[in-house]
Image 1 (tube, rainbow, N blue to C red):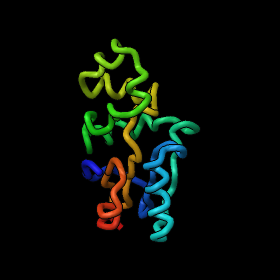
Image 2 (cartoon, rainbow, N blue to C red):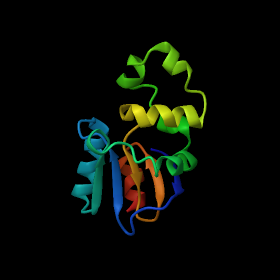
Image 3 (cartoon, rainbow, N blue to C red):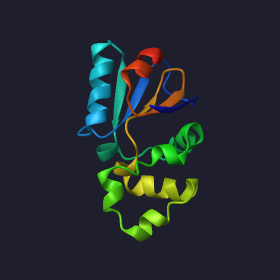
Image 4 (cartoon, rainbow, N blue to C red):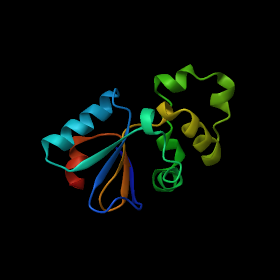
Length: 127
């Protein structure tokens, strides 16, 4: 799990952003449920990437952390598109049009901090 900085979030509620079919998102959601953590799930496929929150995520964890360059979506992009992702603005534009390129899950914790990815140990430190 990479990067954790504070950002506005729903008061006292964890929000998990991702795609339901993603194995890492599934693991995170199971862990939260098994540990009785109250959370809300935001499905990128159905609800899109929240354009109003994306700048805060970029500030909190950086575009290099948010863009999943190891995933299938990234690999399927044409080379021109991949090479055009060189800074925060170009990464944000890609993430808004290709939500599956975002490393998952993005979690906004009740205290406003943001994390990316899943680790049981780090989740345990957050709750």
